[in-house]
Length: 216
Image 1 (tube, rainbow, N blue to C red):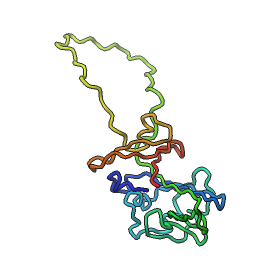
Image 2: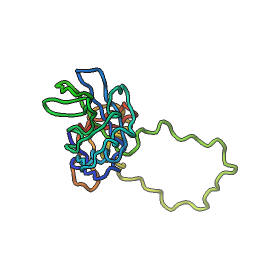
Image 3: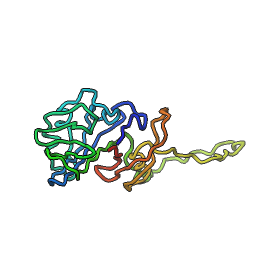
Image 4: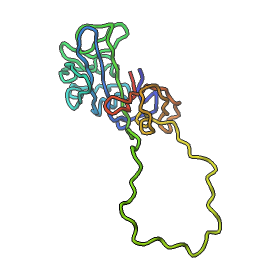
């Protein structure tokens, strides 16, 4: 896993629109799948640190259920941890936890599992789809045609010597704007001025309008 600050040079919660959480577990059929635009959680996605400011209210309010969600979390969140960003029990109830570990993990359960799936996604600000049609022509004609110039230009305008180039997109949402609607691996550029290299990321272009970038 990684975070936006060290990897791409972002430094503010304002650099993130929302964060999405997903997990399943082989021990039960519940699915945790939700998004949140809570400022603290967006900041953790950037820095990788809870900064001792985590709170149950960051999780159990202001969230939106996404496809398939049926878990107790995050609505039932009663306690939190300030350790290790989104890995070590960032939100939990008495009997249900979110926890990611190399040997055992918890997804909406108090029973550790070796067959759980956890994902954390972010969506950055920016356009999410390309224009679908060209601008329409005016419905009425002008009342008078423009007059011709009285003198001819002395020289014809020169053609550009080079075609405009488009830089590597900075987010999955920007790729969607340019017409890429298939989920998969894409190369995105770091924040301007950061000096960091481009990075390959996985983009989900389908869920909740698409434009999601995988962090975990």
